[in-house]
Amino acid sequence: MKKLFFLALMCAMTLGTTAQAAFVSYDEAFMDSIFGQTIFKEYWPADGDFSIDIRFNPTIELVAPDLLTINSTNDLYSLWNNHSGGVKTVNAFFVDSLRACGGTIHDYGGCGEVGGNDLVVDSLSQSYNPVLLAHELGHNLNMTHSVAVSGDLMYSGYIDSDTTTISQATFQGELEFIYPYPASDPVDPNGILQGSFADGFFVEITPVLVVTAVPVPPSFLLLMSGLGVGVLITRRRKTNS
Image (tube, rainbow, N blue to C red; front, side):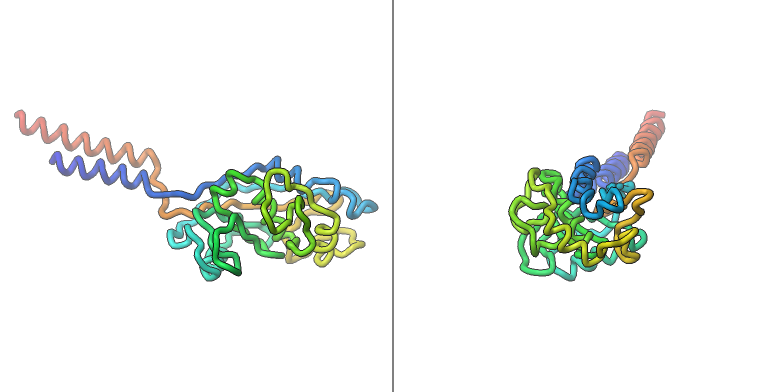
């Protein structure tokens, strides 16, 4: 019976400590400061404020142990095929390792679908560099690396906490394809931008944590441990009697 108790307790401990390397981190206020820059306010000056409010939904989990590490383009699209929500909701996937982004296989910090509604970041890279999530969201807003220069948010080289500027060339050269000027409400029905000049513009993001298994609630672990202790006490009483 002692062995049974030991096995039950070990089972509970194992369930509660499932290997999990990916984690979610983001700074909503920091993202707001980037997408609320003067460049947005000046693009349609006659129409009003075009700053974009970034809104994060509660984090959800995706049980996909094979996608915790993205090793190929097929892995990438398999991950994005698990999109949750409507076409205007961005899914920001957090994984343990990202080694594919539609091209050469090597380590990437993040990858965003240009003009789409999915992006993925390496959890550790994002925690060290919060600009990364903003950069990938820029791709979802149809901005590419093509006209960006060093120091610009959409620059294809190294980005850090200081590369938060979105240049006029990047913004006007890329977003204009989706939101042509002039426009009363520059919202593409198939794009992620929501709102209007009257009510303000916003982008809705749902963080998706990729996990190996569904975490076991602490209450269940306590119950398992309690049952094991109860069995052991009962056995000892019978032995003593």
